[in-house]
Image (cartoon, rainbow, N blue to C red; front, top):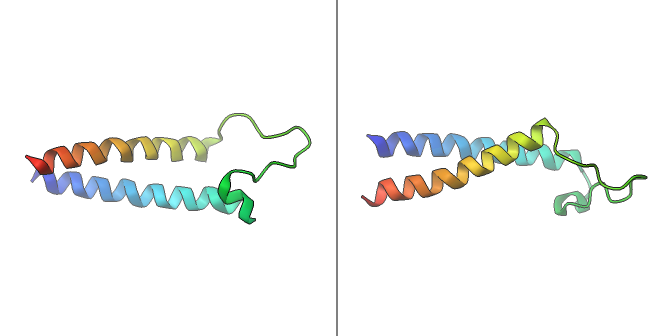
Length: 77
């Protein structure tokens, strides 16, 4: 039962992470934005810090990483 719940949570986090990454990528429509150079030609350089959607994306990435280990540990037992 715990394994099923963890797999459902893991799937929801994965779908959320995919959605947020696609939203971040749409901010920089050109091909260079996919590799992190979307704001390379601004007057004052790259912006500092993360906005709210960037923080959510980082949080989901960390949660996905933790859930990968937790789910594999529970399924191996």
